[in-house]
Length: 197
Image (cartoon, rainbow, N blue to C red; front, side):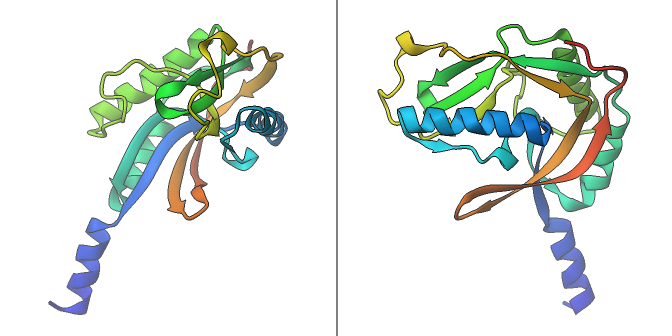
């Protein structure tokens, strides 16, 4: 097979592991990172690095690199309102040893953004990891929490309210390494209007 043809075949097979997310400001990420470090010190496990903190909107997994321009175009056409997340609870999922942060009352605009984005992706032929499952907004803070370290009586854990203004969503490429996942934002998409809480 000629070298040019091999390159074309390789390019067609090349994939990118991607997801759409809300990405916090450096200030919000720093505050959430501090909560993660304190929780990891208390319960054990691995705190999420502040630069990796996010809230996943739609996970696509491995997508052919050749389809990334189409994916960016789909997201650019999504119209949704800006909003503010009030992160005011910490909870624990024992089945995957994960301590997470979230909202006791997620804003309606968040659900609308996820619904609009996932429908646009479906129409364009992209599949999301939810596959009809219910959206459960959360920010992963501590992974690999030892079994039994957090009891159901502990949850939800007391935490103050952290306000996270959301004026954009992003497309992120994830690459696995020995130290965990490394994320790189490859597209940003503004949300309309003023952020409201």
